[in-house]
Image 1 (cartoon, rainbow, N blue to C red):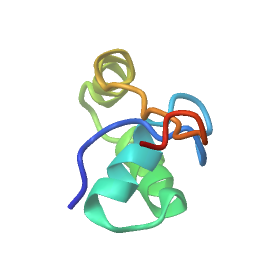
Image 2 (image 1 turned 30 degrees about the horizontal axis):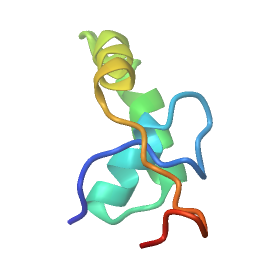
Image 3 (image 1 turned 180 degrees about the vertical axis):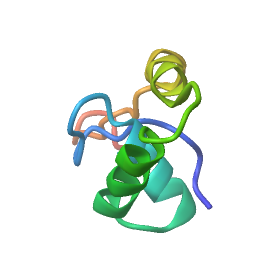
Length: 68
């Protein structure tokens, strides 16, 4: 498993589903479908998504200048 950070590529809104998909080794589309389906159930899913968007660090983009 990789560290939990929002990737620069593959984001739709905030990158939370893409980060979770990368962490658990599944596709981002699958994670998005799971999130949308979970929103049909009662609970604070949307608030948790917003909190993760605010708290998860964004992945640093590696360029040729800082590759070392």
